[in-house]
Image (tube, rainbow, N blue to C red; front, side, top):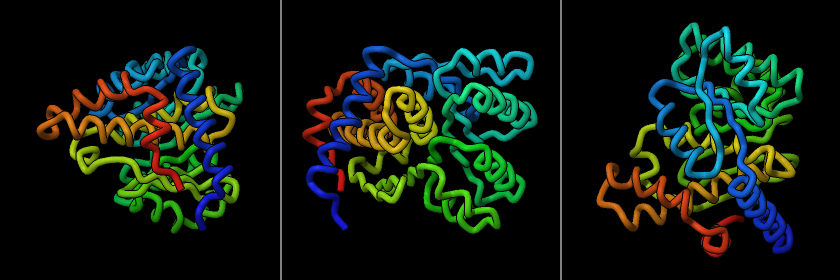
Length: 252
């Protein structure tokens, strides 16, 4: 069912307000993410107005998580250090009621990875960002009944946000977004950055998907392939105005 015109307008207005707030006020995001994604995620967050940190050292991850406004938990390189860091960081989030985003990267490939993803899911992420295969793996798990309690951002050719009885579709984007390593991982970090600036996790997810989608479309028009697209994409995240996001957002 299509969104009612007023609901669509209200969601878009709130999403754009959260983007403006992030740019004006900033946010600190601690990212426990994979080694491939660290540098690009940091650059995306900086371009969008956020301040990233990346340590996974057990002796300091709690301190960095405590100073952050939100946390990203990305399972990309699920080594021993990151596994320990995930638990320590979520302990901080739980005690301080700090929001975190779960990106269950490749959880459909490895049973042990899926088990970690479900354990983290049980600890109450504000948003799960996943592709279709990852989402199917989570849904098929014996403990999948906890999924409805969390906002779900399903990324693909059409992005879908499911939350509190709503299903929102965002149709912005370009195929080049899937041709550059770590754009999806960075988007999870952007969702985390938007969480403290949004009135709900659903709004944070929608704002991130629109921002990334429109920036991707603009970058695609200016680039000759994945290499130039990557640089143009970061530039477009930094420079695209919310008035343009409002005009180009395809939300239903």
